[in-house]
Image 1 (cartoon, rainbow over the protein chains, first blue to last red):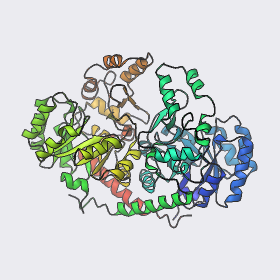
Image 2 (cartoon, each protein chain N blue to C red):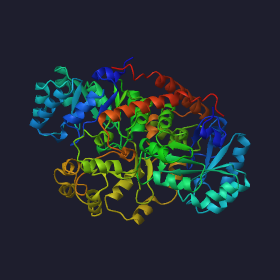
Image 3 (spheres, rainbow over the protein chains, first blue to last red):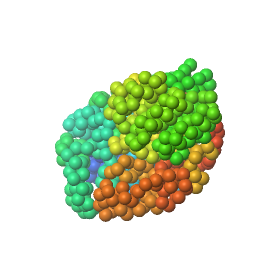
Image 4 (tube, chains in turn purple, cyan):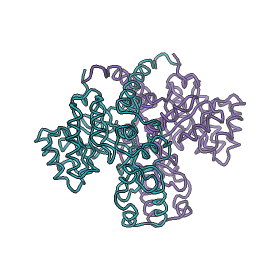
Length: 319
Length: 319
């Protein structure tokens, strides 16, 4: 038996490790691929030459399939795509942009293309653009997020009903039970972010990883909706933003406070006060830092246990 | 085999029809109870004498268990509770208030008490107050909603991990697949609202029911966060609110625009422009008006089909 997602990528389990700015270099991606899921290098935080190095190191560290996630609003996008081709990357996840721009170019080079969307409308556009699969990501997801605020529970069945290509659910999934929930809603696989932030192989700073495992329910918020909505931990930087919001700021004011490299400062350098600490709501459920292999094993074990539980539900005999 | 929720209420299926302002009178509640789920009369829109009439009519229309949902911020709360006792109501769902206030009083009278929460913190408080079960409702739910904006997918596993009493998931659930997802996350049952708004037996105006089945993904929004967060359709009233928000309004300004009886005007009287059209994100998935019995049948059928699909997933053989 094969699943649409395992078949598309040539992987063992229908799980994708999300490409995440400042978290997902070659170490995380290759560890994920070696654990039987799809590892992704997140190009969002990388200069072109840095991306090339990460791809080369990833190829050395795993013989399993891996991919690269590229936010298309990246200024050096043409140079990045050149590197993708030269280095023989087989799988590309595109996000933050029009899927029409690069899909054909990538597919002509035999590259599997997956596009990340946050709404049904964009899912339909991506399918029309010819992508091979869709990641549909809900409001609870960490980092950059959609404007409709549709949650994973509402988004997945809507996309499943109208889209025929493989569907990968993202946002709010960190366990085998979450994976089961997503598949019950019609997803063919899941993309998991926050849980891999708290992995040994993530390139995030230990201080940030610790903040993630300490996070409780209600500790994240979607903010900066006027620029690009982003979900982050409610730290000092977030409180500064809240104070600014009280003064009816312009977009320019918000941009000035945000400044540059806040995500790097928080995630990579571990500045928990001034950094932009992008993480999902499901961080409330994550309470330890493990290796990728331990994480994947526990997700599969939970999924199988959940499968048994579900098989025992007998609605006929109840009363 | 019995489920915690079916046993607690003495019902066939672990499904609760949500008590919803201007939607759920005796007709909807008794139809739900007759269909094997728990019907709830929503007292939120009722004067005390109206509630008494609805309870009496419900008792005449079904011999199955039903309950009453009471928002505790209701001004006539003592009078309502008196009616609950006098009319021999066996199940009460409380919301919008401190579960400590009425739980003991109700339990002393042999009444099953369920409290509705939107966060883990409130779930723990409700359990401590001695309630018999919890409804945990996510951000995607229609109507009044929590401040943490935690989605059902994130909230249910968090509550499940720390709460031992029966757990009912709400928000974003309209189908058997949604019910399966909630149970995979650890819920013992589900509360469904929006889909029953679009039932023949709902007391909502036909114009509102039609608006619900026409609603698409992205058509609802959580707003009025400064007063009490509420999810509604983005109609003219919502646009007027958005225009007001641009002027940095005070709470008083918002209250003035909201005025009185906006929910009645929209839901019950069918004024789609000026009314407050409370509905959940999952309205995007609802595309027809059916009888309660048809809805329950289709949910159970979908659940069973989903169960079979899930049993066929074999993670061992994949690659």
